[in-house]
Length: 480
Image 1 (cartoon, helix red, strand yellow):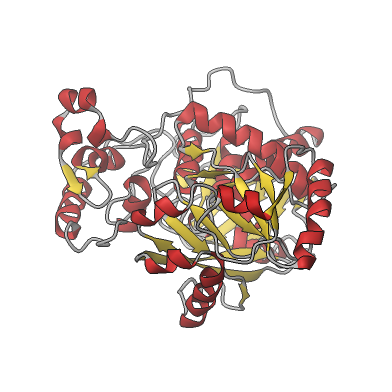
Image 2 (cartoon, one colour):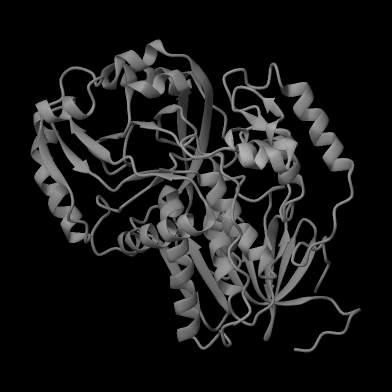
């Protein structure tokens, strides 16, 4: 459809939700000759479920075989591993050890290994207690055996989301943040998506709204699932605790999830969690005393020495649990609508595979034009992983630009150059939390007590500085 300069924008596709899955889908759709919009209710990408998870790149060894989720996680592991290498998303191949603490759990290990084989993962091995303690010597007493998962990895979930969003915008996707979808009106040729910042007109709608996906689904006449927010609280221990553990320690999973784990993080800390508490409030991301008491009890059994270390941060996230045991990804050709629901925490690993699957469904529906041949190369992301070269360590980079040698946040070794780069990037941070996720500033043991004033001064200076308008990051357009 030809658009005049003064005519409202009509998108070919609107993707609702700028978490990892939504950004991956928008990026994939922008690989075709389409006008794509991406709307997000929060003021930054990756500010919902995608920012607060265990940040593990899963092999899918323990997924339910023959489900869509198992297929997507296995495929997503390969896709995201390759994408991380191409874009600089930090990944550490730590491996994992699933530990049995009871006779019942020990007896379950052969079945878990068989499940892994059914999922196409053949590298698991059952080990005895002596091997468990050889691999994790600081583990608490009482372990009876374990199952190795050598290819489980830790990854930066923040950089993953930002990389996918940045690539989407670089490909021409129009990103609209602070734009919460409130409804949809279907017409014969187009759908109007109603939002808190006006109406958007589009031929197709892709619902990747996470915790709100069931509400948007109802706007298209469905009542096929209900999202139950499942809160997961976590404790983050100081970097001095990293000597205690060099791999992910997993419990034997249950029907409610993977349980409480102990894991190193990509930033050099150690993490304990998460809890799994079903709530009604879809905004209840606060932590709780009961949740911390539960984690400390579990931690005392898992790794008592860990509890002697300092907790530097706590956080919680809400997972979009549903009554179904699998992903819900369906294409309604008649209404030009795609549901991507019930993704839960495995969406970090599976997101790129989900995007690939969605484009396949749309191609089968003859809803995609030809692929573009002019796509830009993926953006190289700034490294915020502890085990890789950081700007303050890079003598050549500092010689070329002294701002990378000016440390502002001393706990996390964040430089003035990194903060500047965040604000001159395609998707600048909308506030302090966004800056934290891009640089690690104020995320250390002092939580901004020493560096807060200087970081805030730099933020305000960059926010006052005019930035060039970048194609794909247009200001709000009222359409309809």
